[in-house]
Length: 115
Image: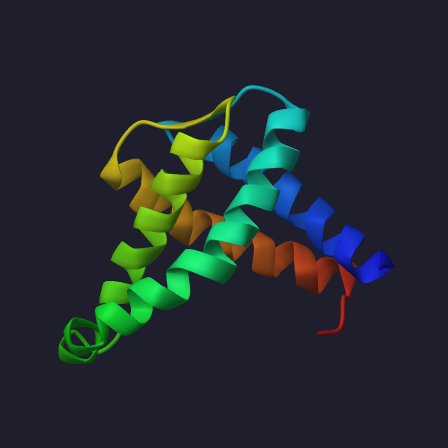
């Protein structure tokens, strides 16, 4: 259970930092970021695998680059489902997904969490 809480805290902080860096990303407060990180995790666990399977030929054709588009769609969906978390378009979602991944990876390495 503590590993789950650490992962959730890392995701929340990463979302707040991403909102600070990426124009078009907005998180109202820490509570909204915490809720958004839970919803983002649920969307990643439930909807993203379905999208990956449905777009597998396109993903293979683009050598995996289409996964960036899928990540942006997931972030846009999480933005629509979460009050206080707003993504103003596809480009901020695309850039935000890249920045969010980098920040989450960096924080995970900094904390030293073992997967």
